[in-house]
Length: 251
Image 1: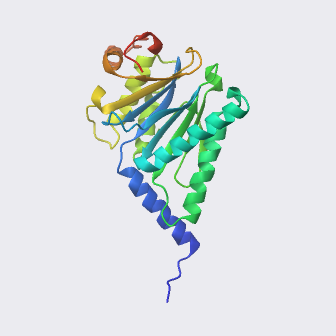
Image 2: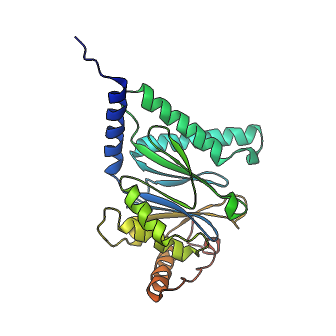
Image 3: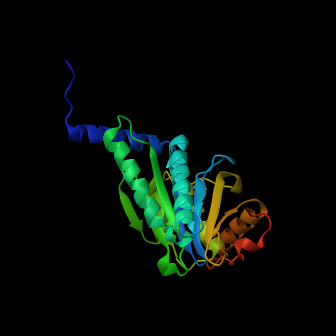
């Protein structure tokens, strides 16, 4: 005889399963800074990215099982490319992509035996800070319009608490990066050292023409980390660190 399981219990079991899977990985944060939107993830891999570009002004950050959120990323890229080709590039928005991701994850969660162990962020940089959009989509298809900053991952609540104490929307890039790394380094309530080799960093740069997404790594990332530490140690504002687009070691 098959066992009967109440729908409420099925949903609870699926949610617990997904949360446990997501909690095994490291967190990622997305936050505004004076020049746009900064995306930072604790990621030692140089090829398996947690942060990517979806379209001209839209970025993607994810935590959880890589094959599953990579499928979501590819789906978003295909949708954006087709819609931009059929209509106009300005018709592609972060809200559209966030809604599609929410519908997909919600369908998988309710209809499949195994939910996807992912949590994602869709960010779109606007012409002004007030027009920036940051959406958080969870494994069950829930979508939240976040203001200023968001953390995703197993310890996101603790990371968000640290971000809340230090976040400033008008901070320069180096100070914003210092805030993000400070929060990620205290992900599990224990302080640890995060070096450039452990970080995946990218920005949606408001002043950049056409494609706003840019990765930051190498000497440029090391400089920003040192500037952020110096500014934090001095108790003041870290140097602005210039434009990410001005450095040749950025991607």
